[in-house]
Every structure is written in structure tokens, then in C-alpha cells.
Length: 373
Image 1 (cartoon, rainbow, N blue to C red):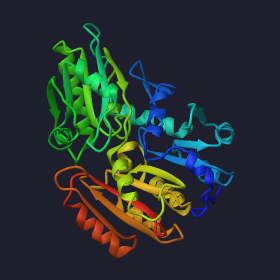
Image 2 (cartoon, rainbow, N blue to C red):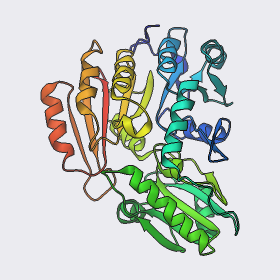
Image 3 (tube, one colour):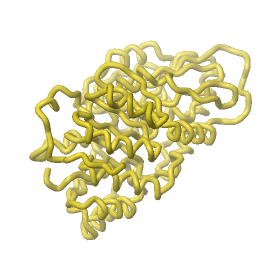
Image 4 (tube, rainbow, N blue to C red):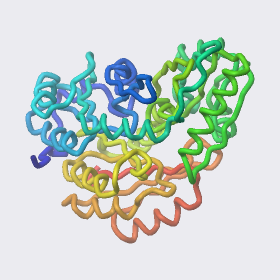
């Protein structure tokens, strides 16, 4: 099926839909986080529909389902607003699962579940784990810059925590700007931009040590949404439960701020939130390129995270297949002491400029959107 959503068709009912860059998608994902599970090492682990990226689409007409159907065929989980009945029919027709209620629901294809199960098995420690001793409760809570509200559940989790765990980047950059007060002992994990799996393993080791030391209530302080492209897929559930307080990924908060400078909403058709390092998440580069080409041709704005070493060349190849002019926006180290935004045409010269500029940052996000906005 060929995607045929028109980026110029914006019906008046769009105002009734929740923002795709706001909390609605992630609140809905947290509510269905345990609806799909896979077994790893004798324990059931959740497969969150936003864990390794997602497509979000406002479904207002049958044509809007074309890009959704293509995404499902490519193994991508999709968040939908609008016509849920048509989306549920599509999930049934393609062998996917339809979960959720309220303004945002999810279509999750079996290929996504299989891919995510492989990621879990790669990241989770092997072995039976300790059988005896107290259980540890972990609350994964979002931390964002002071421009975003702090959720009451976050403050409650921090107030009862015996220890608060975060990366050294979070401690140095985000926490001082968040407005959060942390009274418990803070433990930092080195953020390794060369190997995120090493960062994830570091979190699991710290949690294990705290559990063995008798710390049964822990808060994990994570940028944005703790369940999206983050460490939870490597946290073993031996004598441990994990609860997620949803938030908004920092990259999307930055993207929304950037969108306010444009003449039209770049997310009015949809949003694709993807990693520029597909191998980390069980995807090939060819699969990522195919997704990007599909979404860009449909007028969907793509937000590529993990782009410090991400596949910019492949993204540009997808841009060339889109059939219309696009723009690149490089958002670097937002809400750190040295944030920057660079906007260029999505052509060879622009890509070369972005490639050079991202070398000066630590956390880089690339937006690709229709130049007509």
C-alpha cells in the first residue's frame, strides 16, 4: 500500500486531537505498558509500544490509514488519534494488536514484538538471579527542564525513595534546571555516548547493589519519558518491580519549541520518533531508510534521536526519495548550558553542515520536515 496522506489537508477537526508532541501519547502508552509481554529468563517483561520509537498519526480519513498500514508492514508500532474504529479494523486485518482507550490508542504488529523481544534478550543479564531477600520497588520518573511541569507522581516517588539513580549527564545538566528537590542519596551512572548498552548495564548493576544493600525503594530519574529509548529494557526483574511515571521525551519538547518558530505546525499530519542508530534497537539500516522514505513522502515530520553518531547519510537518502523539499533542524544539547539550533535545507550542503556541527555536541536530535512549513 502506498502512503497518500496529503500534508496540505488540515481539517477543522484537527483542533480536537491531542498534541502528538505532548504528554497524551506517553500517558496512553504507560496505561497499556503491560498489555503485551514476552518471557525472558522465566519472567514476563512488558513490550511498550513507544519503547523503541513509534509513528503517531491523526486518522481523519481513509487515506490517513495508508501510512499507518505501511508502518505496520515495516514492523513499527503506531499511535493513532481520531478514527479508532478504522484503526482497529486495520490492526485486525494485518494481524496486529489494538490496545488502549481514550484519545490515543496503539496498533502493535507482531514483527515489532519479535524485534523487541530480541532486544530484551540481548540486554538483560543471563542467569536465574538471586532468589532470596527483600524485593525492590523501582519508580522510573521523568525529569525535564523547568519549562515543563513536574508531575505529582514524580515528587511522590522522590519523597519516598531511599536512593535516586541517574546518569552523570542528568546530574550535571538537567537536574539543576528541573526545579526538583532530591533529598535522598544520589547515585550516578556514567553516560557512555559510544555504547548505550554499557550505560544500561551500569544502571542494572547499581540497582542490584542497592537491592543487596537493603535499599528497597529507588527512583530512577530519566530525561523525558522513561519508557522511550531508555534504560528500562535492561533492568532485570529479579526481586524487583518497575513502575513508570510517563513524561515527554526531551527531544520532543525541544522539537515542539522549534515548531513554534514555523508558519505551520510540522506535526499536523503525524510524527515519527526514531533512533538514528537502528542497530541498537534490533533494526537494520535498510529498514530504517525504508521507514523514513515512507513517512517523509507522506508529509510526516521525522524526529531522529541518538544522532551524535546516527545515520545521517541514510536519512538524506530517504529525503531524496520523498518527492518534495525538506528542511533539516539540528537540536543540540537542549537545556544544557550550551544549547544550539541549526536549520538548513535538506540537501548535500545542508547535511555536510549538520554533520560538522553535531560533532560539537553530546545529545543531538535531527528533525526532518516539509520545507513548506
